[in-house]
Image (cartoon, rainbow, N blue to C red; front, side, top):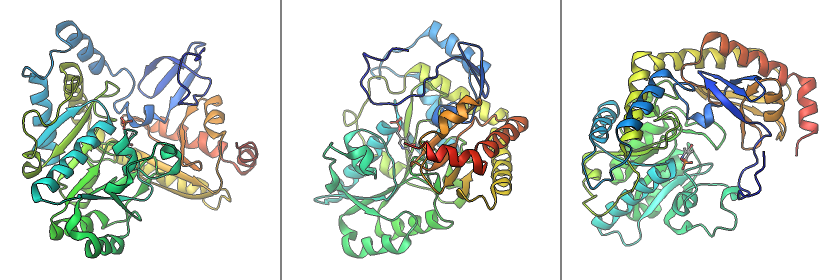
Length: 400
Ligand SMILES: *Cc1c(COP(=O)(O)O)cnc(C)c1O
């Protein structure tokens, strides 16, 4: 693997795959891996789902791109489907999570502009991750991703995640200048941290009282990941704006920003756009993914397998001196270790298990929503062995 012509932005493991099926990946030597990472919550219906493969093949032979200068039937169908599932009223499509969040941020600014707010402020959370464009970077927390880029912080007010009192303090101090609150229902990159129960409802109530937009970044949690179409469904609230991307088209790049009518209406022809956004291929595959999730009842599977994994991991890792907490929702599970580990992902891969470590010390599992019982069991056995006090102390000692 020569990577000399690539910019040095990633630190990949010395591993590469040539084929996948469901939750299994194979490298060129024929070694198989159990994929508990799902391409970072992207391959939600598993690798090479036959229906996804067929949809891509068929659409590639019909039409890939015509631009938004013409109507795109699949875009209308996907918007209809997503608005029906979400309870929101309209969709805008682009190509990534960061772009979907840019759309949300632009909607918030536009709302402020129409209201005559001179310098509209958006409330964001500690530990947040919203993407790598300049605006979404400024909305994100963490020196690691922001260092050196002179992020445009001035548009954002940051509060501790899950802290209602801190939000109320913002309302008292800056209420009239604030236009929106943007948050992830479960912080993903921030360490698989679910919002405390009742928090989304409190945010909704405060936004209603203040006339702020409630904007949820469901780029990672959306489309079934937490065992619901959208994580907010669990708290019975309806946000004003929701962004989606990762799991929506199983690896074909797509992003979506959904909004309620009153907010969606702020955009007019020419005010926003995307060359690739909403092309027939991406939208058709996303429609297929949504149908697969429905027909294979994958929300229920995600809830079931996720609950089982959470329980099994909690039981098997109880009292472990190196494990601080096991938490998560649906098939978004984090194991917080007491210390940072630089080697755990590569050690796991050597044993045939693919996982991710975020925030330095949180093992993150994001398997396909199609995960089977025996695969869930294998994940637990692998992890328990990997985290056994003896091997864990070795991994921690080798940490970089
Ligand atoms: C991954 C992620 C993003 C960024 O998505 P990209 O497609 O990489 O731009 C934004 N928000 C959340 C919550 C994410 O998990």
